[in-house]
Amino acid sequence: MKHYETVFILNPVLSETQVKETVSKFEDFLTSKGSEIVSKEDWGLKKLAYEIQHKKSGFYHLFEFKASAEVLIAFETEFRRDERIMRFLTVSLDKFAIAWAERRREKLKQKA
View 1 (spheres, rainbow, N blue to C red):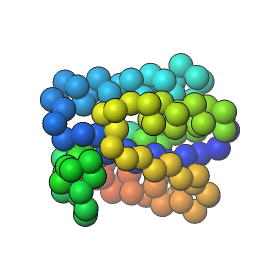
View 2: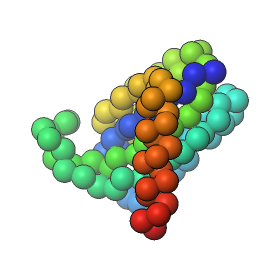
View 3: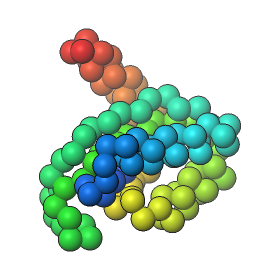
């Protein structure tokens, strides 16, 4: 299993409950397929650099997880099918990116 990181932007017109339902849907999808979620972060409502679907802001979320390539393909297909998702980006993490992500999480824990 490879290490991945996905950032996705949810439509800003969703209620807080709908946002939580959507995030838990994708989290449950990964865990049901045998993937391990390393970390998840809610970055909140942020202004976009440019309009997407005539929207100027969106709810940002980040998942860091370990999954097989087959699971990743199905995961991204689910993103494409869900109309609440405005954009998403998945990257494969190498050993240096994994180490950097761990350091970043430690800094966030210290601030909290």
